[in-house]
Length: 90
Figure 1 (cartoon, rainbow, N blue to C red):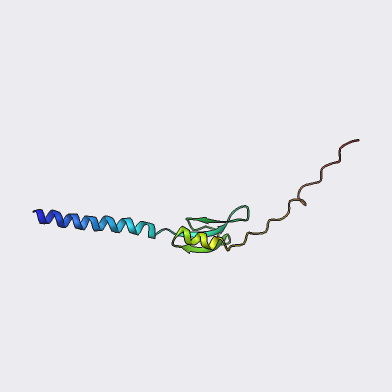
Figure 2: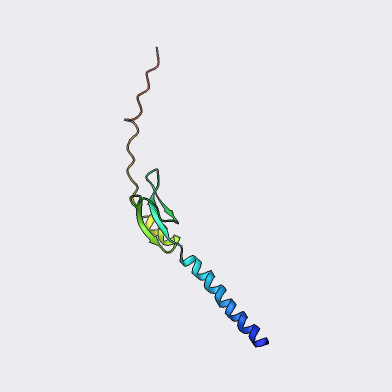
């Protein structure tokens, strides 16, 4: 009976170890363009494929490394959208 308990303990430890190591391996990271035109790392696949720049990556560090080389999107100037202020009275 003692050998049976030891075998069960060994099998249980292998199962727990497999579950713990398999969970982080399933994580995927993507480099996407944010709302302000900058690039960010996210942990879920974006629904809109036009915002995705690179991915999937297996680790956050790998995605951060690629993020350093991603150019920012150009932001249109706001000067044309904002009317000029009136000059103060004299």
